Length: 195
Image (cartoon, rainbow, N blue to C red):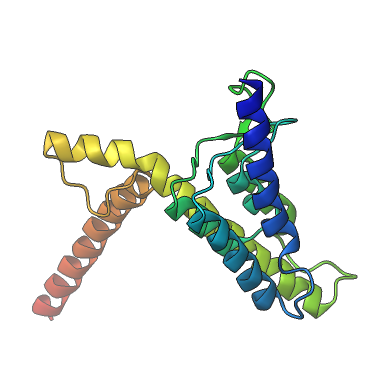
C-alpha cells in the first residue's frame, strides 16, 4: 500500500509541476494556459493516473487545476476521466473535506464584484477573466452532478427540456412567464377587436 501511495504521489507531483510551472515564463495568460495544457496533455498521453492523490493532503491534479484557475488543463483532465467529485483538502480518511464545487464557489465569492477603488483597469479585466474561467469549471461540475438525474428521468420516460437539474427551476419559471405572456397577448387582441 505504501509503495502505491508513493507512486501516486510521484504522478501527482508530475501533474502539479506541469500545471503550476509549465507556462510561467510565457508573456501572456493565453500562452501560459496553452503551455500548461500541452504539458498536461503529454502526461495524459503517457497514461499517467489523472486521479493520483498527493500523499500529504490527498489533492488531485484536477484540484490543482482549479486552484491555479487553469481552464484548459481542467477540461483536459475531465476529458481524460478525472473525478470531479473528489474532495479538496481531505483528511487521511479520504472522505472528509469539501468538494471542488464548494472551492469554486469560494473563489467566485472572492473574485466577483465591482471594480475596487484602487484597482487598475488591467487588474479588473484580469479578475473578470478569472471569474469566467471559474464559472466554466463550475458549469462542468454542475452538469456532471446532474447526470444521474438526467439518466433517471430518461429511464422513467420524463422529458424535461435541457434536462440538467440546474435548469429545472428556470424551466418552471419560464413556463409561468410564457403563460403570463400568452395572457397579455390574448388581452391585447381582445382590446384591438373591441376598438
